[in-house]
Image (cartoon, rainbow, N blue to C red; front, side, top):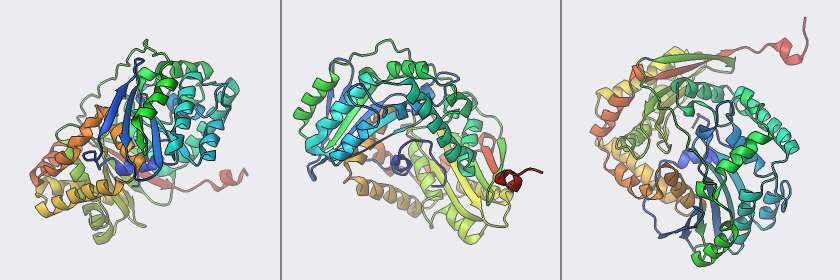
Amino acid sequence: MMIARVVSGALALCLVMVFAVFSHAAEPLQEYALSNGLKVYILEDHKAPLATFQIWYRVGSIDEPAGKTGISHLLEHMMFKGTPKYGSKVFSNIVQRNGGSDNAYTTKDYTMYFQTIASDRIGISIELEADRMKNLLLDPKETVSERSVVMEERRMRYDNEPQNLLFEDLIALAFKAHPYRNPVIGWMSDIERIDHDDLKAHYRAYYAPDNAFIFVSGDVDPKKVMEQIRAAFGPIPAYGKRTPKTITEEPAQTGQRRLVLKKEAELPSVMIAFPVPNLPHEDSYALEVLSGILSGGKSSRLYRSLVYEQRIALEASADYNGLHRFPFLFVLDAVAAPGKESSAVEAALFAEIERVQRELPSAREIEKVKNRIESAFIFAQDSNYAKALYRGMFEIIGGWRLLDSYLDGVRKVTPEAVQKVAQKYLVVDRSSVGTLVPVKANRKQESGRGE
């Protein structure tokens, strides 16, 4: 997938590759609730002596106050900077010394922390996560230091990466009012204004048991795990005073929007975004299958047409991610082949959309995509991390039980349904088009020498 997703953590890029594959749980999931509002879900799997612990906080970039974009992501960084009991960077060292691995990431809709560790040591994760839910230091000096780290991360991942910057600009263009328009990492001017007091207020409001839930998956005894969780998290009080943020509804789009990004790059590229519903809207399943028709390997329509037959693009893809709290986007993108114009690439992308709208996809093509979705799900079933991840993402958008009906929804998709959603949503007047125009670097500025 060419389009970068704005999430933190080494494993976060896997997220966009697995959102489309869900099914019924093979093992029963056990649910618990503490009196302080913390929900706990445990999924037993005794195939290997390992377990994954995930704690999800219902706070992402859409929950941030005006002028403080990026504060959720910065707070994620600060969560590794220690408590009075465990100093800075001690958290990860403890997990690693016990043979485990850990990471975290922030999205537009939530923040999640996780560890995979030997199942007989799951208590380490429980103790460490409970401690930093309540006792994070948020040292002012560490805040200044980590803020600089995030600013440099923004420069490296977005400001200096043309494809990522184009995608960021496209999102901001496609959303006029909804906070999805803001990048998870934040706008640079906002990041440099975030201070210790801002972080402290954000932490107190959102990092509380009544705004979190836990998933444990693996070789565990639910009764013993719950005893440990109650002992560690039970004494932490609910915040209770949190006022839900009012999310501005995105107004209907009535004309095409366009932007041009001029940036040092090797080749031109084009991205096109259309507003579409999220899961579990009835059209979301057909949109998922449509995405698979357009972009699913070298046999997909976009690759076959733009890359193989017309030879006007080096890469071409489509992406639909229904796992958002609010309606999001259906995105197509392509990188032009050397010597080819972005206008030709854009025309070819719209031509493939028009083809689906005009010609009914074959039953065989639809079935092939649906089979690929199912097989990808089966492949993922051996991972404790993935089992918890899928259920956690569904819990965020409305409840983990929505997972049980996902593949049923996909299986019911017909060629007519795919054509219908293409006609209904992939409309020119509701599109936002971003074009990357390569420019040559200023060699004098690069070398640091003037006239």
